Image 1 (cartoon, rainbow over the protein chains, first blue to last red):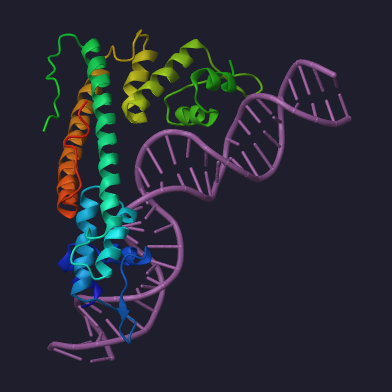
Image 2 (tube, rainbow over the protein chains, first blue to last red):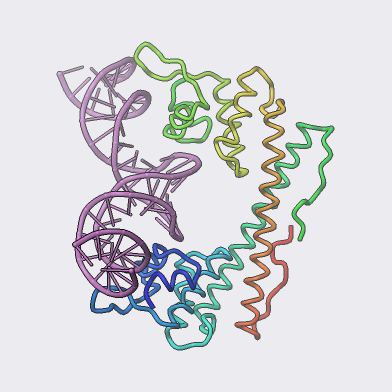
Length: 127
Length: 127
DNA sequence: CTTGACCTTGACGTTGGCGTCAAGGGTTAG
DNA sequence: CTAACCCTTGACGCCAACGTCAAGGTCAAG
């Protein structure tokens, strides 16, 4: 399939696909007229990239997963490098959550001080 | 005082001070030779801006606080516009925390699936 | 006079993941 | 032949809060 069809099926823009290629995450065969040609495995790669991006991974974070898939594994996280990224991202997310909780507490305290009459439900972001 | 001294006392760069001025958050008198001249109230403004930035506010968010101080109030959050920003930022932070908690859960689930043997302490970011 | 520490404005660089033209070639249906 | 839709590469735009360099003016000390 060509880039337009892959884009539609993956739910991304053609611009994004070319960008992934430029970043070395996607490789396309070329037809005689210069058009990029993709197959089902490429769709799988793009799907993997997208799902990682939506949970806050960067393209660099996604690289090990892509390479893992290209190495023939069924899942992108079947390789130790990918698992290591999971571990690192969990630590990063935990850090960000801690930072946000601290900020929330500070802002809430300032808010309470500035507006003593304002009722404020505590811990507005419990899951 | 001139820009260098204000920068040192406020713990910011001179570039930052000029940027705040460009954004209309800081106004400087000019000496006859064109140098910016500041007083203690300007130091207070910059201090306010900095403390807001460190808890994740943007310069736009800080604007009402600065205007409140310039209006003669002792505290930047003594005005209803500032309090409204507090309210909005709390909602934003809560949103971000919720998003991160959801991401953490997703990543943790993927991690656990990819690496069944790996022990994983749950809720690593409790405050 | 010269050094050196200060100041001025202007303008480009940074970061990520693309969006959005621009200018052109390929392919096919009518 | 032409419309219409696909594709190509190249390159600037975006957003925030400055960092950094350029090129030059100001002022006090030695």
